[in-house]
Length: 476
Image: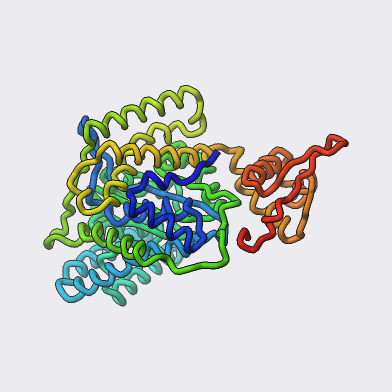
């Protein structure tokens, strides 16, 4: 079963922020809590590493993916979280435009030259293979059109440095990261980047998580990033999450194991129609905290080198981590991670990274280079929270429930059904497309969310009774 978001594991002011924002907007803590953590990673990206007593270190970044249906408040969460990033970015743009834009113009020109060279080589190879020059140019037309768009964006704006990337494609991502000294973050709702990730283009996402050297090829004009670092906080629809975890390649190559999913249940919609403004104290705290972390990303000198700080685990924190690692190994043996063994392998690393985020949330004094036992226990609690969601996301039978439950629920609302049978539900979703066991999984999901109640009649048949609150506007 999916438990509550472990809000008590957050530093006091962060917990106050999540509670207050959720109460004011009616949006679930399952969206505000994980997204706040994602924003912390995005603000601190590329500047911190977490190191244990063996010397092993982990980049302080994560890929967080909360999923919720339409109307659950994803866009509202994202808009609020992005505000301080966008404000600081405007300040940095002004500083950059008024100081030395020549360096960035040079970098932009280099990127354009590499893109143009790649496109021209594609044309040349096609001609050598016997394709007419006209057809070869037509085949590469989309590449040249994309280059033109990039050149136009370079010409029209002084947008560097970019704290967050917007509307970037997988093909553009390595080049954009190269312009940002190898570090980039995306905080978005319904981001198209999630659907664009594919096995042929996921190398930058794999290596942006671990910090391994990335190269788009062996050619001289290829993009090369010595120590890439990428943060993703993508709030998405359930079907996008299911499509991601249903891709066997993402599971087999370890990409899915790098993500921390959150499955917001059907009964976690906006809980009030009386929205109020969030308390000013929590808005100010969040803005100040993000600004403090972003200050470490400001350019240092002409070479724009990143200064990395290590957050070292104290002996107590190392003991907590070792106990958690032992627990995970025991759960692997018991079969809990049957469908996600690679995720279990990475769980201790996730706990370390999450502990680092908690430490940075705590305030200026927390940046002095240590992660104590309290922060590590919080990281473990958060890791276990995400684990419960990940185990479901990796389980094929759950995909049917998550996919069909919203459709069945909407059909009930549209037609104001008080009771129905499983056979009727199967007709609603298409009896030729889904078998009874799939519909049963969806009905079980709705029942576990207290939207339905199953009863056995005197004739031993099963009927489902709809809870009256399903028809309340605040649950739509």
